[in-house]
Image (tube, rainbow, N blue to C red):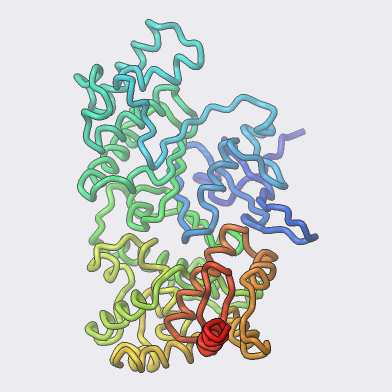
Length: 460
């Protein structure tokens, strides 16, 4: 009898099945609500991590990237489904992983050497052995001679190297990294990426697989052998593919830029299903679509600024180049792009942001006309704003409590996200002069209702 092991398609190398180190089977994450409904963060997902791969996990803000990492490492239990470590349930076996976080997370009162020794000390390794292993790892990451320094004496790049050394000194089978370069300046991050690739390619690092969570598309294409892109509401895998570009990779080469553009397209077009051919995207009905759109947390001024920039670029520009020109991270630019797209001011075509006729009029108009256009677009395209406005017009006193809309949003979003949705709705509604909001009483109101209320109070 043969042992059957469920494999991800990406877990087949040269036609030979490779047993996954970590395998997630139908894992999901959700939070119960007082009603029978629940907030779904991650929908049922299958995922494997196999030896010999650097895997990059990409996705927009709110897609559950860090939640997925926490479930795969055993830091968080899935609400349903199972994570396996070498085909044994992760909760019932010892696993050998390490995590490098976005923040350096070093103990400031410890020296560099003591910081690296800390996980070995926690595992009960003898002092001589842990010192030997820690010194060797510090030498590997280029920190020989800094053993006695304290974190405050080091640059950001050097502190993150200490974080790498501390993670690698336990010789993890899988190294997890959660946005490890995002807190660093551009040049330092570039150097550390190159050093990571060098350690990996020369098999200097004692690990069989690397799993990196990132929002930087270029970083993913530069480093990864395999890229997984998540969608949101709830989090789900939109595409999972092998990177066929050989290392070392040239960021200016056509295959590199084509792949970056393809991933941008997947990230910015949630209403299409990616295919194996990046040149062909077919529109489908997304069964995960919720009643309320998730409002991107962007300000109207940001939308106006983006449209003005596009007008200067003849109404169209590649999102990748646009982010680069503005020195924006993609997570900073995408909410503004999403907001403009939701309002009908631009569309996404082949990875390009293309201004629409109404977007061009908005970008070319004076402030009062912009408010009118924003108001029309908000009412036509945003359900929550339309409902708030109509509820206010229907009520005799033209006011309504925030709690009424929070109750509806809570059926779809977490409590924290529901509050953020209301905050964004207030910002957009005030700008468009759809309504006002009394932060003290937590009530929406029409502008004229506020004036009437003030008149009544004065009369009293």
